[in-house]
Image (cartoon, rainbow, N blue to C red):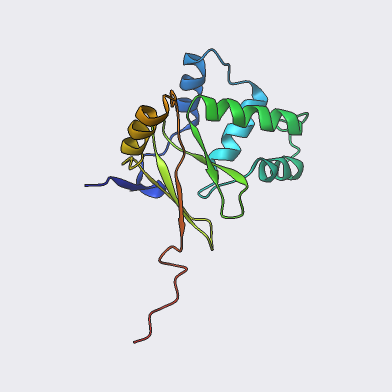
Length: 159
């Protein structure tokens, strides 16, 4: 049976969890990274780097002062590399991020509102094994985004 976990039902990862994971990988949670982590944790839906840059522009308080666009992009890449952010391809083909606990997962993405639901069952494993055998590729990773329309965005069926 497939294991589907909506983001809202998963235990939420917190800033201290992220700090510990960064530390395990040799990174410090600097002031700018802390601000970016806090902003990322505010998002229930996928967000883009440019959204964080815009939020930064709107919140030029003491913590956010001096953080540039490059720092936002670099920090998001670091967070994705340590597996606390997932890159999700949006229906328009652009990349967005979702804060999630580390682990292998795939996503259902609503083409209308952007709601994203993670699932941990991996239907690609058999295909990866077949491709490895057929092509001699050493496959080290894969992505799967499934696009559709969430129940809230579906038009009601005619009664």
